[in-house]
Amino acid sequence: MLKKISGFVFTALLFSTATLVQADTSFSKNESYNENQVSADIQGFGNRVLDQVGKSKYIKFDQQKTEYAYTITRYADSDIKYTGNPLDIKGVRFIKVQFFKDGTPGHTQVSTFTPSKYNNAIKIVKMDRDDDRPYEFDLGMDSDNKLYIINNDGSTTQLQQENEIKRHIPLTEKYKDMIF
Image (cartoon, rainbow, N blue to C red; front, side):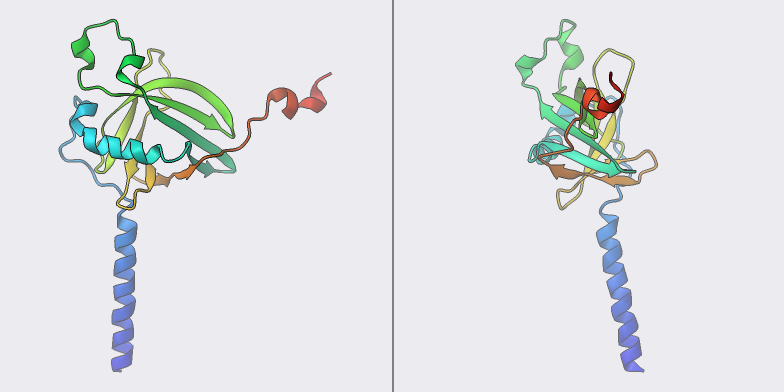
């Protein structure tokens, strides 16, 4: 009987520690979130996330047999030319974000990072003037420095850090049997 009880206690302990490991990837709401904050308000954590992203050329995930990848790099202060009021961009740090789908590059956009509505995360915010907003997302990092995209419902998509992604295949090569 004592062996059964100790077996149940061990099983319960195992499940409780497994739950704690999994709980690290679910990002809780940031109670001090303010949508008017800028990059400088989270400069330390934001730099840690960008440093982790910079350890590889791409951050990527696979979904339904399609590979999605991003490159994120910092701009130097002198790389961005702003002709408006300098107070409008006070405390804002700019980054370059490019998206790839199965190796095919999307357009590169100027972005910034701001505090996220989730703890342990930054929000990548598009700063280009066109109306499309395809690259806005919450980028989280757990205590093991693993990166995640936080979905709207609070669930996460784990990102892999890679130096290579699928090779881009031009349309002329992809559909060569249909070209006359």
